[in-house]
Length: 255
Length: 255
Image (cartoon, rainbow over all chains, first blue to last red; front, side, top):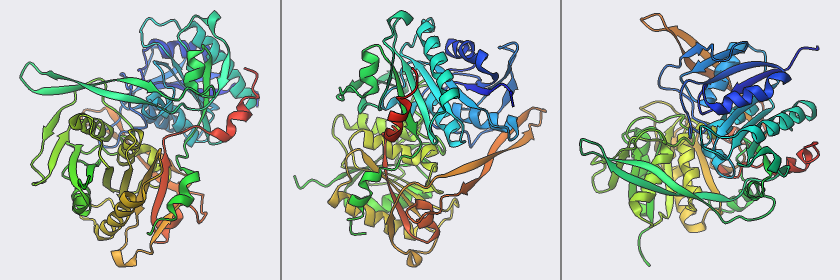
């Protein structure tokens, strides 16, 4: 009782990324921190876990005054190893990010940042992923810091519903231009993929995944709409992927 | 018109795994096949994509009579590269598997097999992931082959609903003991993770993720119930992760 909340901090851009530094700065006054983050960039790792190679975990002195570890694995590995370090004590909150780049709409599926939050949610812990719509290493995180503090304060006081985590995206605008918060749904938008074909110096062909994100879902209740209108988007995100409303349709199959 | 369906075949256990051989055997009479599968095991890769290292794609002569490629990336990379190979033509069906091991319940999140199916679904293609509840390289796939043929026949004739793919799991019993099919929901069950700590020959500590899958959701409308009672489980699976029913609750926050 009276104990400060324990907050697990992770990300997918790696333990030294600017985004996680700003996340730590944003949440450190809310509780005691346990930082477990990848030792290298792990963008686009989705909900991957490491099963075929050993996992390494090293203490890190990168954040003096905080217990911190770097991990050779994925963001989801980081959450799982954090639980192992804690030997049964559960964090009061998992925060992941601040990601460099959008995790709105269907990007949630590819996002290591959000998969770490979903993993926290699977463990029954209130969990939030934060992403700023700016890929730059020199991005301005001031608006994001305001958003993190506001959302974390509410999450600790009001509680996130069970079996749900939050996907919070922050538009790339100065803090004073933020219009507020929109609790909304994941837009039905998709990547139109491309591949750039190149040749190694040794004549072997290889590919880089490229592409454009396309949105045909312009409804005002979507995260994409919110972000385009300078709102912070907050999407309650669940790990139940069942399409409950189509079960009865498929029951009509002759199987 | 009159053209045979084009079926994209992939998996996460790698292009030479027994499971994909049995999948190819099961679906080859339904259409022309394009096989694009990982060049090595990619279990537990979830919806990971390769963004920081080059992707390689090689033609494979492992399946004579079929167009086949092995890919250095993840199952989702395989689906994306297949679309690149097809230059705009869309497959009529994506099938992924047959995975060696269960992808029922929340395993869907970690599963490369199912993520490939979800990726096909994001592309607007009817997509199905198949998994057999047997990790053994020598597993008996006869029941799984029956299930694949039945489900694929129905998927081609009856159509899978839009924005939905199927997560099909087959119990580890002889074909004649299969009780039939249950269209059901993803059980609310979780991994109780453990880590086995070891030391390298050089004295460095490393970890293997272990654990037990725990189910407290014993309802008869779940995939776990179906599988325990020797039914093939069929879970319609969506890429919308929004928790629509909690949006209004979070709108009450002071943000």
